[in-house]
Image (tube, rainbow, N blue to C red):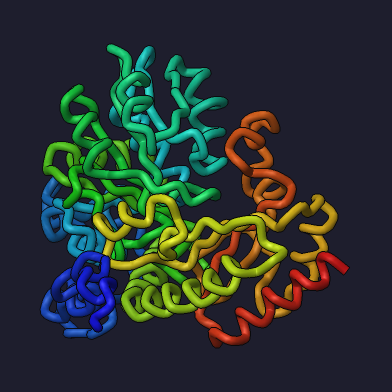
Length: 404
C-alpha cells in the first residue's frame, strides 16, 4: 500500500540562481581591464588621479577616491551582478549605508514604515537620529499585511523591510509588502543581511533596493565593517551615487579588497551555514529544555512556506528560547559554550552566540523588547562552518550546564 505522504510533492526552495558561482568569481574582475592582466584586482590606495587636461578624468571617471576607486569599483560591479540589480554602492558601515538611503530619498516631514523588531541599530537611527530631523517611523508587524496597509500615511516615502528579522527571525513576504508599497507610490528597501545574495534576491521579488551589512555573510570573515546597497533602477542608483560622493561615507580600498575576496566563497560558505544550522535546529526543536525555536529554514517555523517561496535556501541564523530560564541561566548557557563564541555580530565562518536583550538590542526599550519576545531567556545563534556534530554537542552541553 502506498502511503499518502508519498503522493504529496515535497515542498522545496526555489531553484538556485543560475551561474552564481561563475558570476561571483568573475564579475568586475576581468584581467583585460588592467595592463598587467592581473587575475586578482589590486588594492588601489591612490587618493587622486592624473588628468591629461583640466576636467578630463582618468578612465572617464577617476578624479578623487571618494568619488571612485578601482578596487571599490570591482566590488560594486560584482555585487550588482550577483544581486541582480542595476548598480551597487559600498559604504563604510551598514548604518552608513542606511543613513545614505535616508539622506537620498527622505526629507523633513517624511515617514518610514518598518518592522517592529528591526535591527536595534536601525531602530536607534530611525527613532533617535532621524526623528531630530523631522522624519518619523512606524514600527509595525510586517508579517501582517493588514497592519502594513494601515501603517501607510500620505507622507510615507520609504518601506524598510528586514527579512528574516533581527533577532526573532520573523519572515516577511517581500512580494506582498513591496506590492503594497508600489500601489502607494512608495520606495522599498529590503535588508537582505541575514540571507545574502546567494539565498535571496529582493529586487527580483519587487524591491527597489537591497541592503546588506556586508560585515556579515557577504564578507564572511569578521574582519571588515561595511554596508552595501544595490539599486534596481538607473534612477535610484544615480541619486544614491550622488549621496555616496557628496556625503562621503565610503569604505577603504583595503576593506573593499577584503570584501571582494570574501564574496568569492559566498556560495560555498552559505551551503555549509545552511547544513549546520539545520542540524542544530533539529536538535533544539526536540530538546526538553528549549521552549521553542525560530529557524526559518526548519518546517517548525510558522512562515517556513514564505521562505520556500522567496529563497533558494536559508542561512545560519537561529533564535531560540530556553524553557523557564532566568537571565542568569541564559548567561550560564552562553558562558559554557566552547565551540560557539559569545560575541555580537554574525555571518562569519566562526559560530557566535549572543544575548540580544543585553547585547545587540539593549537600546530597544524594555517594554518593546518584551512584546517582541526579546526576553531574558532568548538566545540568538550565528551557526558557522565548524564540524556539524561539534556544534550540536556544544549546544547540548551548554544547555545542561545552564540548568545544573
